[in-house]
Length: 124
Image (cartoon, rainbow, N blue to C red; front, side, top):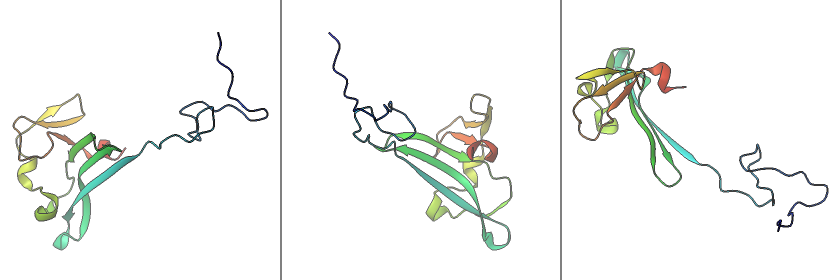
């Protein structure tokens, strides 16, 4: 037997994943929350200009969705290591990795991500 429709007269049905994020019965869905954290390093005189060096994305429940270093395109003058946990050694010993469009580290390095992306991919 078919289930009775929960649609109210004169009200359009909105399916899950629709633009307004409402299911057919009108009850709000939990938002699809993501958190993004970026670590910046300093370039230029006295390291005053900041550029992206690491990007991390986690789900609402804390699951890591992405964690990657970002290859600096300029010479880093201030790694801000006490804050970022990153120094020049994070970008040594890398091999090309076509699967990610960047590089990978063969050996783990103190909790840093294995993947290193070029800025053009990291900021899409």
